[in-house]
Length: 409
Image (cartoon, rainbow, N blue to C red):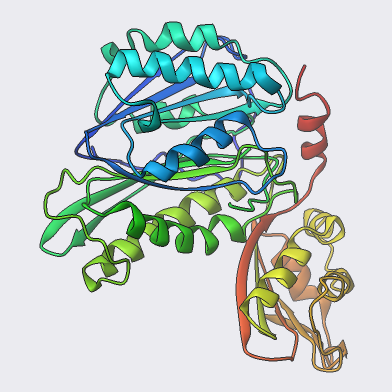
C-alpha cells in the first residue's frame, strides 16, 4: 500500500447525514483486490443536480452521459467506480454506461436521466461492467446515512487518504447540511471543468441556481489547483440538493438567503481541492502561489498556474533550493503582460526580487529556511494592473516518477 502523504490531515472529518441521501459501497475487484471500489448514492425524488465536467476532447463515456443527464436537472442515483476510467473504450464503453443505467433503473425504479455515473482509473481498458451490475442488485442492503469515509475510500486510485469535508449552513429560515467527498492525486490540472468530487446538501435549491453556485465555486477552488499539469479525461464535480431540509426551492442564485450556503460551498470545494493537492503523487510540500498586479484576474490565474506547473519551480521546491530565477522564468512564459522593471517576488514573505533585479541586501538564508518547511508560499506582483489570483500546487519529487512509471503493474 502507498505510504500516506506527509501533507495529509490527521484524520477524516466528522460528516453527518444529509437528509434524503443514502450511501453504500461494494468490493467488485474491478482492479483492486480486498477493498471496496464501487460507491453508490441514492437520493430522494425531486433532488436537483448541477455539474461541472472536464473540457478534455477525449472525455470518458461517463462524462458524455453526465453531460446529457445534467440537462434534466434531476438526480436519484449516483454510481462511481474506481480502478477503470472507462475512457477511450469506444462503443464498448458506451455500452458499459448503458448497462449500468439499466441496472440502476431496475434496482431503484428511476428514470435513466436521473442516474449519474463516474469512473476513474486506467484509460483505454475495458470496464468489466458485469461486476458492477451484479453489485448493484443488492447494494441497498449495505446502505447507511453516514458512510462518507467508506465512500471516499471506495473512489480512491493512487490517493493515499480519503478526502471529505462538511459544513452546517443556514438557508433562509432553514438549517441545512453540506457534505462532500473527492478523489485525486495525479493527472490533476482540472479544466472544467483523474479528479472526482461529489457534494450533497439537503437545502432546497433549484437546478439553475445550483449550477451557477457550483460553477463559480469550482472556478475558485478546483480550477485553481494543479499537481502535474495534466487534465483528466474524467474530471467530474456534481452537486446534489435533495430539498429534504424543507422550504420552497430557491431559484435565484443571487438570493441573499443563499449567502451562507454560497460561503459554505466555497469552503467545502476549496477544502477538498486543497486536500487533492496535498495528496499529489509523491508530494512532500504544499505550495501557495499568489499573483497580484496583473492585467486582470484571469491573467493573474494564468501566471500563477504557469509557475505552479513549472517542473523547474516544483523540483526547486522539492530540493529546498531557493532558486527564485525559475519563478521569474515561469512568470514570463505565461503569455500575459508582465512589467519586468516592476516585477517583485517574495518567498515565505521575504523579498527576493524587486524592480527587475535581486532585492537589495538579499540574504538567501531565511528563504532557504522557509523552503525546508512543508508549506511554501510564493507571492509575485507583475506590476501591470489590479488583477489577482491564488493557486495551489505541490512539489515534484522522484516519488511521482515511481508511482507513474509502474501505475498499471
